[in-house]
Length: 312
Image 1 (tube, one colour):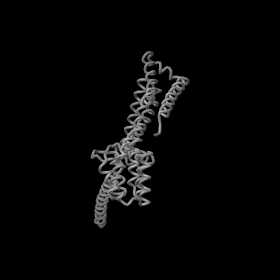
Image 2 (cartoon, helix red, strand yellow):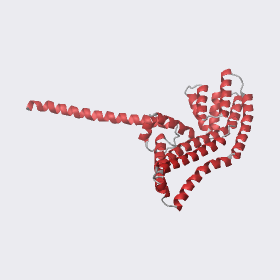
Image 3 (cartoon, one colour):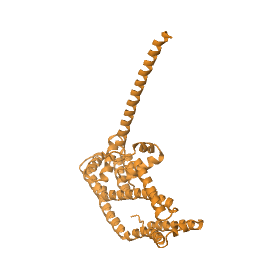
């Protein structure tokens, strides 16, 4: 057995060396992968402010799914400094908190309903933030058209004019035009870069401006006169949209007041007769009545909002 001691020791030392080498290779590869992920995240749609991102592991897993990619595009359109993982966790916390509040304040039956309302409210906030940012961008379109007209009249190319407008305009127009300029700098065509812009911030005014720029870029003709006429038109549409929004502000307030009145009635009923909601939702008939009432309140909210939505 003594003649096997030396080969055994040699094999053991070789195995230890291979294990150390494998561990070092794994650690190096993991560090390189994390560096690539951080670099890709840094240039992604989410704005980089230097703060430490929460839930990076969950964020990476969600971005691989269809839900994560869709949510990532929606977050990029809102301009919020949130990742997919952060928004998902915050939405889950909001839904869980409202579930507990609804179950404790009203009745156990209202817990899941409150949780679903919390999820709907989170995504409704994204839509509201996107619409608000879109409205701000539309208000900047006359100034954008004026800058492009001046730059074109000075003899600058369209790519240079877009880069100059990105530097001069404030957010959100400056940020969006900066993305267009980045696309153009890496070889994308003007048509594709502007098409992505209209996809992120859809509006009739932007479509008209983009169509004017694309046609002039293809035909090679002058665009100064068209941009100056478009500037005047956009200014008039801006004032019209402001007047319409002011006239419909009372209708919008009514749409939100209708469901709040229903919630107030439930709270008042439970305060006047403690335990009445528990007794009402303990039977199938009571639960059906509550669901029908909530559906009618939701239908009223939808119809009022639909009636107050006027495309200008």
